[in-house]
Structures are given as C-alpha cells and as structure tokens.
Picture 1 (cartoon, one colour):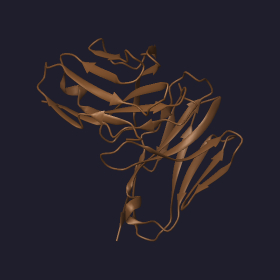
Picture 2 (cartoon, helix red, strand yellow):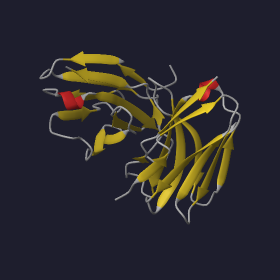
Picture 3 (cartoon, helix red, strand yellow):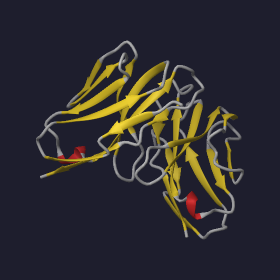
Picture 4 (tube, helix red, strand yellow):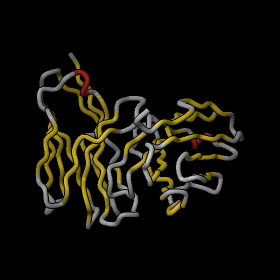
Length: 113
Length: 114
C-alpha cells in the first residue's frame, strides 16, 4: 500500500532556530514529491516540488531534499519565524496521472518567541 | 478571485441532516479534487473530476456521499443523513489537467455534525 510517514508529529522551536522535518514514503514509482504548508484554517499551499531525479530544491528559507534510493525526503527551515507556525505536509504523486496523491499526516510546527 | 473558493466556510448540522458543500475552482482548471481532512490528519482523497466526468470516486466513504460537477466548473459535495464521524474539514483543489499538475487548494469547509 502506498504510504507516506512523517516525523516528528509535532515540534516546538524558538524563533530564529533551524529545524528539519522528515518524510519516508513507499510510493513507487512516483512522479514527484511536494511539501505543502498548511496554516490553521486554510488549505495547503505548495512550498517545493521535486521529481525523482532531483535531490534538492530551495524556496527562500525552505530547502527540501530527496533521496529516491532510501525513499526519504526532508524539509529544512532556516532562521524560523513566528509565521512558520503551521502544519507541513509531505505529498507524493504516484507515476500515473489519474492516481490520487498520497498525503502524509503532517508535522505540526510551532515557532515561539 | 484568482484562487479556489469554497462555501460555506463553516457548517454545523444536526445528525441526520443533509448538507451541500460548494467549490469554485480556478477558472480554466480542468481537474477538481475533493478531500476530507480529520483533525490532526493529512487530507484523504474522496473523488476526482476531469471536466464534468467523475473519473475516480473510490475515496467516498459511503453511498451517503455524492459529488457532482455538471458543467465542468463548480462542484458540489453532498452528504446525506450526516453522522458525527462526518465531522471534518472538506478541502477542494483544482489543477490545470490531472494530478501530475500542482493542485491549488481552497480554504476548506469545516463541517461539524452534532
């Protein structure tokens, strides 16, 4: 069964610190892997997208990595800000246009002053 | 607006009531998706439309759930005889064409069944 597992489930860090969120998946083959940010009460917004041949992608203070051999991805947030408080969801697209996306349960990040 | 919109944003229903949730996708987006997101969980796929055709409804949890997109634009998710376990946020997303394209999500409708 296609699965996406994320860790940690939740995380609290001080403003200005860095953090790394983990994503392990079993979806294979896959087309791409995305990290989404979901603020409370809002829909998810895409942060990064990587195909199976890419191993890193940056978007400002967010850097995602992908190891297709070990089926692991990470999202690194640098110099965290209070506005980074949100859920971060790892999403894998199976390699078929009409197969549903596989979502992780997300990591709930709280950045405190 | 330029994004996906959903209405109502919040809905409280008594158990046994029928509800209808609306989604307005981004103009020109061919594909439309419905997801159910329980508290503290990631979105779970419900159903998928390509234009007006419902190509996949494998995620609908029971025959009380019904979705339509009659003109290939606005979509409605209907839940009949709501039950407490239906309480969740219902997210709609649209993409240019298919799930390989980026999906843009609406803000969701939070349904609470009492």
